[in-house]
Structure formats: structure tokens, C-alpha cells
Length: 255
Image 1 (cartoon, rainbow, N blue to C red):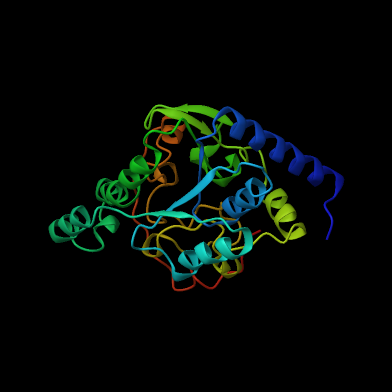
Image 2: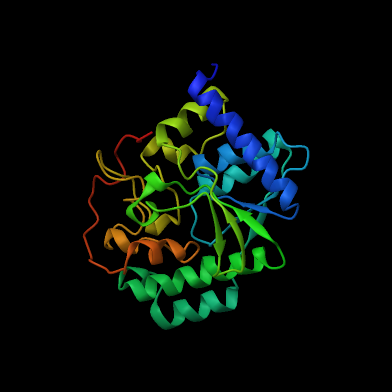
């Protein structure tokens, strides 16, 4: 399959932008959750003469399908993904104090869990680097509607690039299919956004792509701390519990 002229222009602009990032920040890192945006970016940086290093956060609660993508990326591109893990002592202490599923109880406990399993490992991954690259898009959720392509990440103290910020889901999937980009099997089971297994469900028709992330909370609180600046741009988070539906994992994918 070949790219249509509009998608080809998108793709070429993405390659040029990533090449500039690599030139200006030779130590830049590409963060991957092994969702389609991130594997598209991996496919793109693999075309560069000096691709940024790739890392992912293994929280200890990821789907097996997501973990298996590390091997898929290695086999397809020869890229070794650095896998970051949380401090096991901090995880054990949190579970002992609050229980294994405390994140369902309040936004505060959920963010504490994310802080231990995601934010602290990310801080270690980014330490000493001048920039990082994400697969965030404005279209993904209300917390990302003002997402810029380039920003200063004051939480971690380095430049942050969101080269897909203005891409639509149709553009991402159009390029990914045309270029045969590897995809996480969870996408075909209704997961447009993929996170920890107990905190992610399939989405229903008409829901935004991140509706399945922390689905029991209000839409404006659904960030984990990795991209805390998104919440500052869009308002104050809150929480509203909602029951999980038996049909949540049976919907067709939205792509």
C-alpha cells in the first residue's frame, strides 16, 4: 500500500522533524507505551542515521501483549528498548499500606500508584538527558487539547517534543497501515489507548480514545503524572466513580 499525497506529506514532515530533534539533541529519548503512535514513531526514527534511544516503563501491571512488543521491535528494527521498572520496595510498601487495587478508591491513591510505578522510573530514565519524545496527540483526550509540538517540561527539567500533536487517528492509522508498522494486538480488541491492565478497558463507540484509561474518574483527571503539564493547561482534576461494564472489553477498535 502506498501513501496518499496528504499522508506522504505528513510522513515526510515527521521524518524531517525527528531528524532535527536528533541533530539538536543527540541524547534525546523516545518514550514508548507500545501503542500505535509510539510504534509509528519507532518506525520513523529507525529511518534516521542516528536514531534516538527508545525506552518503555514496565509498571508490573502491563498486558502481556504490550510486553511482547519489545521483542517485535527488536526483531523488526534491531532496536533494543530499555525497559524501566519501579522500585520494588516502594511497590511492596504501597500495596501493604493500601492494597493491590487502591487506585480504584480515589484519584489521590491512583496518582500515588502512578507516581511509584511510572513517574519515578521515568525520572530515572530521563536523568541527564536534554530532551524526550512522546506520541501524545491533541485529539486523544480533553487533557491534551492544547498540547504543543514542542514544550519545556518543567517537571523533569528538559525539552519535550510531541511530533504527532496535530495528527488525527485516521492519519496515524493510515500511515501505519501503508507502511506496515507493527501494532499492539490490543488495538484490534478495542483499546485505542493502552496502559496498565487493571486501569484500562476497551472503549465504546463514540468515546474519546482515552476514555478507557482510569474510566472511573472524571475526564479531566486522566493523566498519570508523566504529562502533568497537560492538566495545568486544561483545568483542575476531579474524580467520579463509575461501575465497569461487562461489555467493556468486547467493543470493536476505533481506528
